[in-house]
Length: 584
Image 1 (tube, rainbow, N blue to C red):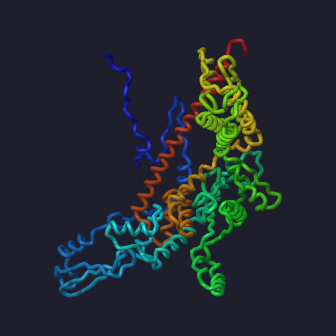
Image 2 (tube, helix red, strand yellow):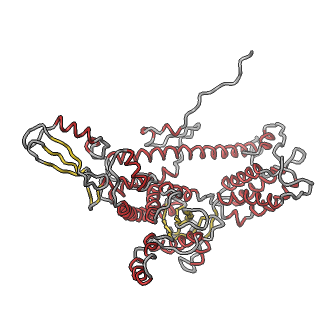
Image 3 (cartoon, helix red, strand yellow):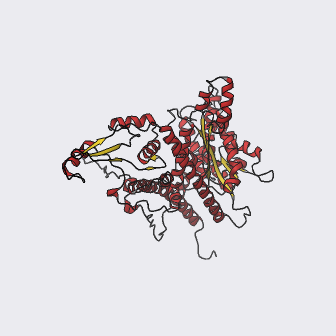
């Protein structure tokens, strides 16, 4: 029996695992022939590298700082066997844990059984009557999306004392520190966006540097129209950093308790409670995003000294209409609407699926149904949607080429061996043109029937309108907003009901990590009055470095594909404009 010609190659490991500390400091170099340009920096690298340098949080010695998990019995036995009393010199010291604990912070007593001398000390330092160990536990668990009950379970499994009974007070303290830090972070992000806008502007652009292009989106804790909480964000298109965040809530636990009292007592209580009420919205849940956007647009000049004059959002959102009607910058300042390429791309699939449902059971001009084998299947609809989005992204900045690329999809599917129509196709992806260039024959295998294409032509005509594509020339999406939304609900899972305070903590902590990476949390710890410590700094920095390295790999794979398509176009032009002696 002949030996198989198949060669089994060694499986290549994921490049993201190569994120060693030595390779994370600098971005490697691409060497393509004579090209020695540096790799394209990912969005994560651009954001994290642009952050202001932090104080040296790792200057303390790891051996004598920070917290350790230790069995108290082991420590007590070591002290009893190896230590002597400073007063009497007897080897009779005993370590006791006082029952009066404050969360996981204990009062330990070092007592001499001979002279009865006693030394008491807490297992954690405090700042402003807040014990560091308790606060770090609350903050760390919330970063993992775990609340009080989950923390109690953790302490139970670890045979530790229960968390602090004042858990809600700890959350309020944490929220106050996060609010202060996020406020400073957003001001810094706004200044950075203004600087970036000034550098990217053309000479013909006379608009002020403070007029920014932003991506706007909202998210809800629960799907449908019954969500009690919603979070909306405004992100700079140029820098990719969050410029403003607003949490909307129509629930307040204190208000629910207050309604149980009598009518007279409730009215008196409401007057005082209104100043600290967590509920800042009333109405349908779908109206949270428009209300939040209106609020953020109106305060942009006062808080950050900028105007959001270009609004990148999904087309079916009512937020833009609400903002436009409110005239946040006066009647003479127009706000331009831009479309998210991702949402526009989905229109192709959505409209074709709708058309397929509407024409279900109806025969076309060729006597066959719209769907079925070798016709408009769900797989074919998905392919058309992907090609449509690719046509928009590959031709950002050029409206004519974009419109031409969209129609090239239609005519490419219309082409057959008897009647090829590839005039609009690009050689970088069109196999017919590539075969024609190489002098080879090509057989059309992925064409659609004329009747099917006639049925979907109105959809192509609508989605190739210049008015729509003009709003997509920028080539940007709302992916940064979606990424931020996912960070929020990792810290505050949608499956668990929480108070407004927890949603705000999740939104603000996610904002810091989104803009500055995990090292942004160090300043929050400093605002709480704690020294972050060497372990905190090194671990958070390592997490950021791995995030940046993995993002760089993904970004450069995409950049490499773009360069390959660009080089293919250049080779085509070179073949068409080949120099011949005597022609010039």
